[in-house]
Length: 615
Ligand code: PEP
Ligand code: MG
Image (cartoon, rainbow, N blue to C red):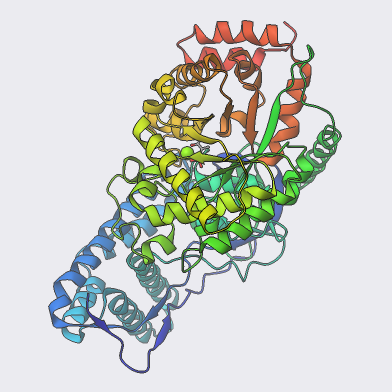
């Protein structure tokens, strides 16, 4: 598209509507998915509609059609978002539904044949400006025109209409610009962040030392946002319908990351109960901290490897304190997120080396970039490495190893950085989203070629190349595990994507969260099949999906022969405690019984009752 900036560029910020501040608001409860344990009490900080900064941009007359098409796509996306929010209102109490439904209806009407949209189209056409420029200008003009009618009596009603126009304008601009990343600069210390949705890249920007808790309307139990929040150790509830739209500035909230309940304006009894919960949680943490130095060893002397997953550098101290023996899954997406350009070999080398050194000789399994699905990375789109247009089915598209094999430069740069960092301590390399043996062979060729090139360049590398393993996170990989085991040096079973692909449920989806079940017999059978393929060859196999962090499932996984687990740092002591109380024989018996079941409910109850004395 041929766009020209008129000098000087004008920066416009969409005005934030001035919400009516009720004084005494009644307590209201919202239920979502608990994704990160802990209880938080604090003032709310709403990031429902981040301010979009729009540069006034002109277009050429020949671009009018393309710009109108962009507008149409943003309108369709906005309608879809609102329809989704509306569908989920049904589970809210009646008074909340009565409050929110007319609002969402008003938004929907504005996204139909409205004065607002007619004006926006007209501006694109007549003034030759981009769709976002037109939306900003038209929504401001319209809101001003509405407020100009104020004659005293109807002030509140007119203000509401003007606010609605601003809100819909902001949603359109957000969908048009796919606003890069949010700024949490204004987040007051001790606040609870509430938003409609939070992308993984947004979550990566949060500072857990300032933030008390997080609650959103969208998101699923094992989506990457949930993974990030657990990594940060911030109490969090995702997927609580109506929450962000009911909150008002000045509200206080309690987020219970254990039960999944978020309470707005808690009454004194709720606050007192929450305070007791905070104390109990802190005590439990202290109890677990004592396990840190004890070995992860079963009652009958079997040693188990418990490692940590790594998402963000901020986690390093937590990992060190958790008692984890190394990093079993280093998700390198953090290196590429929330930055304008792709990090070069030197920058990546330094980052990986710092992490490897911090592990003091414990192994670090570095997974090469796993782009795709819900993991959006602006720097890659900006560099033209990934397609700019949204993939209609991102979970099934160009992702993980598929992208890396097609973008050799990106792949080689990262492998070179990992190889150089491997002189600082034991390193292993993991390939994501593998589905065929050819992918492993091709990746190994690249790996060896990069090593040869580095040696020619005079770089110091470990004498023996680091092991090259693969994620088993698609049913295709699990079912061809016997063939893949002949190509890979180790398996890391990723139960998050494996569950999503096996059960055909998006891991970040709120509405189908009850169907996302990593202990579904189909998932467990794939885990068993893959683990056995590795064990037959005496090849290392670990589990690094969120299932590894669930202490209820630890005995089953031990019974299936798995002896290596990688999980968020906070989960290490809880899992260790279970490891230290079981015997392998009883785990094997449990696994035999569980693997005969076909009903997920029966499996859940078997896992829950294991180890408990019969009543
Ligand atoms: C998985 O899919 O289980 C996994 C560990 O990878 P990620 O969560 O990063 O997709
Ligand atoms: Mg995965």
